[in-house]
Length: 335
Image (cartoon, rainbow, N blue to C red; front, side):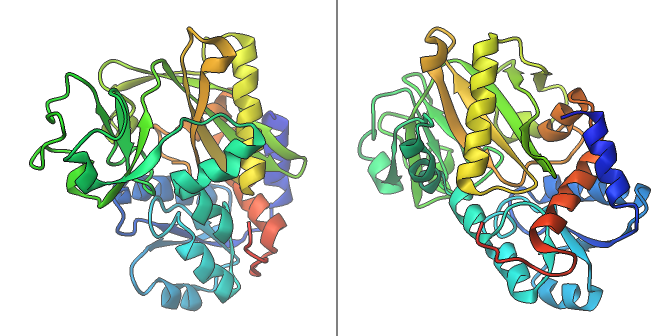
């Protein structure tokens, strides 16, 4: 994809739409969602659309019924905006919306369900299992080092790497700080040494397109919530300085995950690559159906590298919503 595809999308939606931008909410990622939503709203207004900004609360259905938008731009992150709840509500209300539908959202936010959807189709993902937190205080679920993460949170919220040198104890102490203090169950996976890579996929009238590969170079720790959204904590190398065959494999896996999960609009697939193992060292970690749209976010950055400006990217996402649902009418919502 390039600049021409984006400009074609802008011309196709030259007539103004009334777009409600859903943002905020009450998830852990509220502040990021507000940044994404306001950036999207500014871009849509600059493109000539009428925009209603909605900081989601428990009365969101009533507010949408009163607003009567042509399309909802879903800029929410986490639960309930990314897990199928909002998608189901919009389907019932008959309102068109951006990004993926109900079933896709339910599966993609759940890391274990994502594995069940992707691994049988040849997409490599780390092994692992769901463990009760009580078990962690009795024994390690697998040899160290390993990763513990919530089953259905985004933006690396609540992720911990447990190593021999961890100060959480062995076994993990009940009073040690970590996600075991916040969740009843966690997904345990073997830790994959190597490099952090990510690939965005965008839809247009011609189909789905991978935008490239970015490497995330972290000075210390790992690519957690703080590194993602604090300027200067992570270097984004775009395009990634990796062998062409690895870049190609990242794009192939991202496109296949996007299609197998039934994503729409845009998605971002994250990888861990052990560069000492070549192609065998590349693993998909997750596919994000509601990637961030903040100034530090990866999808807008990869779009810029592909010649698509921020306003054009937002327009492409809106156009895909119209193709899937029609203006003001929800589609089946099954993917």
